[in-house]
Image 1 (cartoon, rainbow, N blue to C red):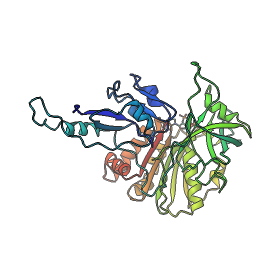
Image 2: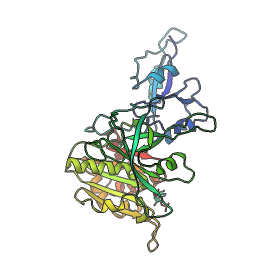
Image 3: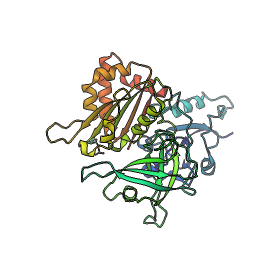
Image 4: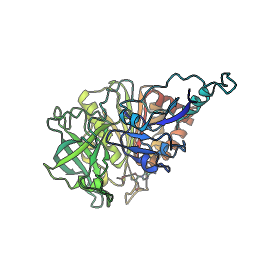
Length: 392
Ligand code: A2P
């Protein structure tokens, strides 16, 4: 038999096809087709460069295998295979080795800090229904500007899948394929956007989906989306993502931390909880430059506090010091500590990657004040499907 080896795989159910891993891998060991993103076992040297850049944790999968899964096999996978039962290869002396498989497995399970999990009561998401080769053609129902700040164009874009089934849960993402070709003459890869509407549609029962898109200077997909007119056709892949999902349990409590367009899934959560008349409250820390650049500032003012307690935090007000979400979390530490101590609390963090560090520090300090260690608390919450991060 072959000597067992550790193999790096990507979970096709959780991967959101953002291709960041592929762009990051220094060995070009990661590639994709219309269906999956895969790792070439002949090239991967476990450098781990791809692990921290993955927004979902789908990249952090390892198996000990007698024969590595080929690229063709990985392209066909709809879900990850389980760990095979592998016996230790005999040594040259014909005796059992000193359990090299156990050592490999232990090493294989040394991930980047725990697996992302969906909440126990979350709905079962549908993933990868529409691919690069077979996208869903949707039509634009509306494209509305959300921000008054002239230098900060954020749009609410509503897409209608028409008769096509396109089931999404709050927290999932879709891929938008910009028209045209790249410099190599290949079709553009899809760009990922979180859905900001709830499961039964932007308009209840209509199953239309909305996106929250910020126009980026020189951004191919964001400019394409922000310039769309009603009736235009858009090619959409997905849905993607199986962990950044909300609990269906009515009494679950949610702590939402976001910046800018990271508010998209938070809007979806809020609308779904309102429609479902959920009893557990939500508390949100939402960071933006100014009220004029905060997406959904107007509509948020109408959301009752019993549904969503809001801490809107601004970094560029003329008459106030710069404030980030992590500063306000510290300022409201009693409220946050009370939520952390409740096993019904779920945490969702979405937005700028830079925020993660600051939020970690704030949480570390709050946990200390509770006599707890944040890393242990966080890992236990993640293991329990109650801690979710999606940053970019
Ligand atoms: P600033 O850019 O003023 O430093 P938007 O995407 O709409 O610009 O909003 C992002 C918000 O997040 C801004 O208020 C931005 O502040 C803030 N921000 C930038 N870096 C961080 C960080 N490391 N931690 C928390 N918030 C941040």
